[in-house]
Amino acid sequence: MIKKWGEKPYYSFSYMLKERFGEKIYKLALNGGMSCPNRDGTLGHRGCIFCSMGGSGDFAGNAADSITAQIESQKQLISQKRHAGKYIAYFQAYTNTYAPLPYLERIFTEALNHPDIAAISIGTRPDCLDSDIIQMLSCLNAQKPVWVELGLQTIHPQTAAYIRRGYDLACFEQAVSMLRQHNLEVIVHTIIGLPGEGRKELLETIDYLNHADIQGIKLQLLHVLKDTDLATDYLNGKFEVLTKEDYLQLVIDCLEHLSPEIVIHRVTGDGPKNLLIAPTWSSAKRSVLNDLHRKMKEENAWQGKHYAMEETSWQNL
Image (tube, rainbow, N blue to C red):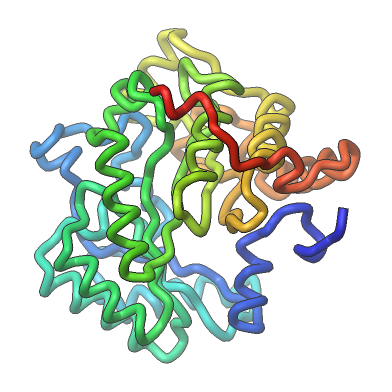
């Protein structure tokens, strides 16, 4: 294998950032004070089955503070551990295009205008993007890079219904098409270890995404967090979480089948320790990453090793 991504056998987010910006850049998790159609009664009241009360933004800033104040406080936290010159403003908590257009434009512009912000990344749902919002994001993208993160999780309808995702695959496809027509980069969230899904179903999702016009992916371990409906099912014995060994093998399978052009934004995750029920081994994030890199080296594995653009079974779903 030719090492085209530096020390890692996959196209890592950190490598892409150094390529694009010429320096190490860190994310600042921000809270725009929004809700979600899965929480405000539009689609439901309890969110996706795995989502914490923080709306997956448990590490984000305080929504009561201005965006500028959140940026400064998050910078201060990072500076205690490492030096950074530039940052990505990551709107993480809940659904970050689920608000009136003038409000969205104001907070995104405030972030983009901060001198230390090199780009913004916006976590949202495909059913919360319309042409006006996308046009606004396109205008901001002409000033600094704007990335849109979509929580697909899986392509399988039965699993999507179980996790209460609330939109179908056609909605996702339309959103990606509209975003790409405006030259906005798309990052997709997937979850490894969803109840009822194994290697076959996971690789079908990966194969599908190889055919989609996406630029990045997050491979997220399923976390069971306190006060979620997923936790209730887990504690009632309805499913088991992955062992670390099984998870590492599934991550490698995903990477080997992924297009080498797709940036890997995440290969694991670390749920808040005060909320994490299982798997407890995931709290040692650095150890998990080290084990992954060692295992990939031992198996001579790299991103795209088994990648091929060919007809696959997902098209029959």
